[in-house]
Length: 540
Image (cartoon, rainbow, N blue to C red):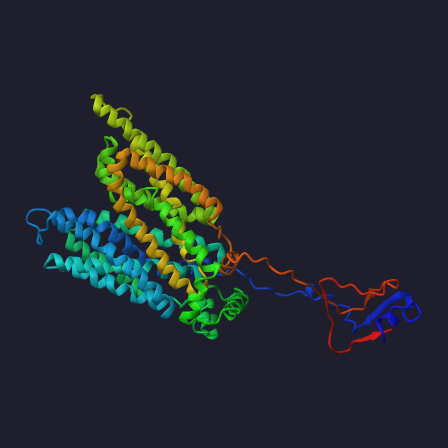
């Protein structure tokens, strides 16, 4: 029967097309959406996710040990009567040789994280640190110290990416920001431990103590599950993926929904060959976040963060403050640890962009005040006048360090585990970590040059101006990833509008469709009728 005939008043009573379906029971709901279901909670156990993240990030304490070791060990090595006497040139090599191993570790991690998996990489990377610290502690010549420091730096470079990537993949969106910041807390804790234990132990005994930290990390890595995201994307192992999700969530948690999301995401991009990875790098979802993270590292480092960390004693001495420079350095270490923890909690509450604003504005203003006092102190010294308000520069420095720790020291490292596509997250995460450490190298190398060009106070003024201007970059380009799934973050870089989803109506009762007799047309915009296949018929 033609539609035009069906729509005529002679053939359709009341000008309606009647669709008869099997009527439900009186007690059944009319629509499927009304069906009462016992739904499982979508949020898993916070305690389990915290414990797994702590185990995965325990090795990041070694990074802080590498940073802080030379500050407390070199004075012992350079003392008269040292077991291995060294000169200033050898001391500089002991301090810097670890920075050669760190970028190498970043590159290796970018390869192993995707090839071996997150868990196996976390296990393997602890071995160089253990061997390196044992070589330093038992060294009979300065060359052994060089090799040991290189291996410890290699391990510290390898831990950066896989620990953050693993943490971001096993944690849920509401906890991911805080848990991913554990790596920064571990580094700050390592610096504090090195300062405190180094004031008690000699340089060789301190190295043996340092070897215990990666040993514990190695043991903990054996007990954590493999990343569910890596299991489904690289191994296509659905059974182990489900088991891993259950271990890091809860028996009462709805892991099926999360598993289906991972499965759908992996099927959209199944190829993991090297050529395909190169294609993925050329996509906006890969190169855009990489450029953003790289610029974030450069801007944060040119705020002067690690200049203060590496040259703390000299900076405090040149500022004009009368406080003991070694006491002030210990206070800076405490500030770094405390505000790293505060930054983790604030990231959970506020997100990434607000913390970036706090760092850029707070660091810019405080370091400009610091530079202004240094400039005025030079004038006082030239005129023979005593300095006044000597508390001001050290307070400005403390505020600067607190603000820089909250955002600059946490946010870009957290973003490494969040913003890159799943299949090349390990590779790009390792390269981005390498960029971060290379940014530190650039700033440290240009610091003496800037001092010669624009004086010491002018150098810190430059850092302050760069920090304030970086606020514009964070406002326009830095993504906010708080409470977003990793797939949502990846999709946000595609700049694609989501297609309009059709409205699906599932009917179990009699439905009628109005028909225009004049125009003789049916209009169903974006509506799909799902009718039962059986016991249905069209009554005219």
